[in-house]
Image (tube, rainbow, N blue to C red; front, side):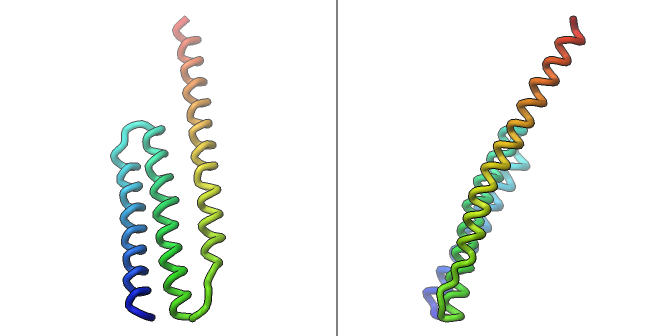
Length: 108
């Protein structure tokens, strides 16, 4: 493996890990569910993309051939993460509306 590929792989791995860590900190520090669910989603998608790119560069340079199966992983996570975010948020909105309706009925 050459020095350029080593440096680029290390840079992408550290960047991806840092972005994912920042998303995790957002999960811990933000107050409401709606705020908490947003930060890890962005951190997961961008951090995973950087880590997958580092994997592609590393294995392509060591095997001297093009490695593309990481693209499938990136596509799968990029598509499923926002969908799961929307499902969780819609369920939370439904729960909040239901709880508000029930509390209004109990007070009347």
